[in-house]
Every structure is written in structure tokens, then in C-alpha cells.
Image (cartoon, rainbow, N blue to C red; front, side, top):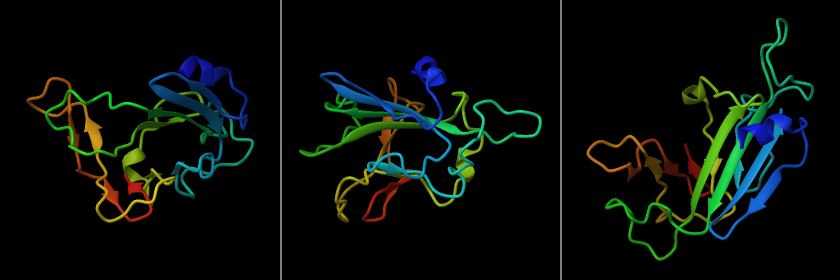
Amino acid sequence: CKALIKEMARGSTPLVYNTLTFRLTIGKNPDLTSVSENFSFPEPYFKRAADSPDEPTGNRTLTGFSFIYVEYFTNIYSWSDSNPVYNDSALITLIALKANTDDIDDLDTVDPPIKTFKQFDLYSNAICLYWDRFASDTAGGAWSKQGVVNDGDACLS
């Protein structure tokens, strides 16, 4: 994914790849606040100047952004003991990166939070979870509610 993103032009249409088990979308844009109806990144943190560079330079240290978004059609964690027992569920992976695909160092300080599952009507009984791959005493991780909340419009993290 990262090699493809590096070759993309800034602000180009995101690339979408469909398989039987998931849909992968990757993109590069200095403004991630409105790239998808399924998720939103908050202003002002994720909105940079249209000519933001992919690589930091001496006088321009703020770069644009890129993202990797995966919508799974099956639950790849169904084997887990922590898997919720629900008839309806949706599973995604969303990764925000710098335009050059380096990790963003200070995502913990983003306020307001990132919103996911915006395409659904999330009622008060919807539970937002994330996969904690470092959960102790597990064989590869467990579902966790820590740090994720349903605000009735989206899952906030």
C-alpha cells in the first residue's frame, strides 16, 4: 500500500481495490477532512495548504496526508473469544499517515476526535470497538471499548 501511495499525485482520486473479503481504498491529500463519507478527520489538524509537500523541507515542515482504509466483508477476528455476538457488524481499518507514508507522531493529541462509521445510523445500542493487538494473555489481540465512543452519529476515537 505504502509504495502505491508514494507514487500517487497529491489530491488525486483515491485508488479502490475490491476483493471477495475486503475493499481497500488508499489516497493522498493535504485535506483529509472530506475525502470519504464513511469517516472524517477533524479540522484544523487534518487540513493543510493545497500545496503542502509530501516530504518536509527546511521552510515547510508540515506535510500533506495519506490514508489506508479497509472495509471487511467478513469478520477476520471471528476466532477471538472477545468477539461480540451480534448478527450485524461492520469492521474497518483506517490508518492516517503523512503524505510520504511515515507515521503521524502525535495522533493522541488530535481534538476533536476522528469519526468512523459515518455512513451508518448508529443508535445508542451500537457498540464501537477497536482491535487491541497488544492485549495481554491473548493469541493475537482482543476487542476493546477503551478510548472509543458512540456519539449517535459515528464512532469517535
